[in-house]
Amino acid sequence: MKKLIALLFAVGLLFGAQAKLDKKFTLTTVEGKKIHIHIKKNGIEVKEYPNKVIILDFFGKNCPPCRIEIPILGDLQKKMADTLQIIGLHVQRPLSPSDVAMLRKMGINYPIVDYLTNKENEEFVEFMGRLTGWSGSIPYMLFFDRNGNYAGYHMGMAQESSLEKFIQKLATPKTAAPKESNATKK
Image 1: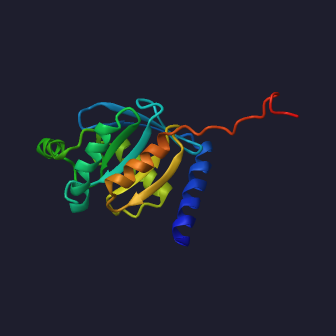
Image 2: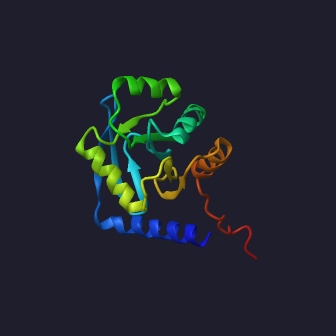
Image 3: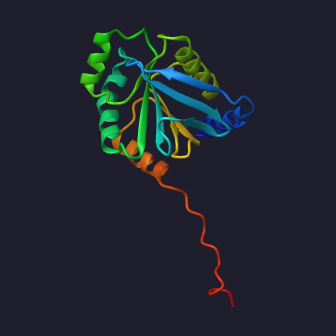
């Protein structure tokens, strides 16, 4: 538990240190669409998905736990489309068109960015990996709240009910404590 807290603290510090770098990436999906990601002080900003909880899902087509998780993530994306955007980051050998069709048939209904298909995709995955201390194990997810603030990570398989509760928490706007009004002052 202490290691987990220390890692979360370190990742938070790393994101905080990024304010000076102001890194921007333009990722290309397997369909050729662009996703613009700006690394900011405490997290990320994704131009195409404002005010949404973002999950960056590092996965591989040949990873058994990833394959089991695909329909779970697809169901969550469909069910929570108004508040959630998953971006799949494929980190194994490049995908062929038949691989993409297979992944779509398995349930991926969100953008897939193939790590090795272009330099900027590769640089983004490597940058995020260094930034978060990712060891290369998959599945691995990074979570960002609806304001783009880094909210944690998950390594290994995740349960749908736990993910859904966490996403709902990240999608809920934080409300400020009510201010004292003149009517309540004595």
